[in-house]
Length: 74
Image (cartoon, rainbow, N blue to C red; front, side):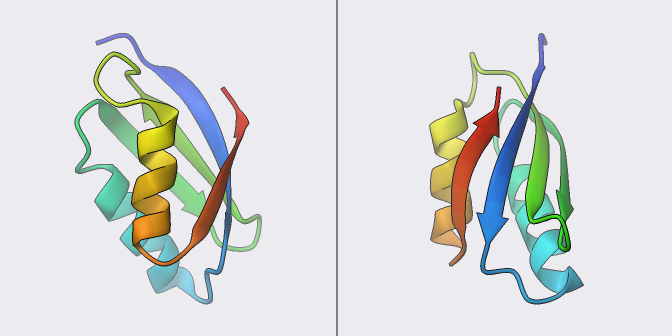
């Protein structure tokens, strides 16, 4: 599975549980092999196979959890 690194700014997190929830949820998406969300940095770094899940789906998933997200790097 070819993966690439995508970085998203995530706002609205209040504690470590928020970042864990985001990581656990994103890692359930097809094509996501790893997600690392940093609370203080307000960043989520995702290893993603874009043939299975595109960056917009990641944003939509984070938004669905009650946070805001925007792609920074792909």
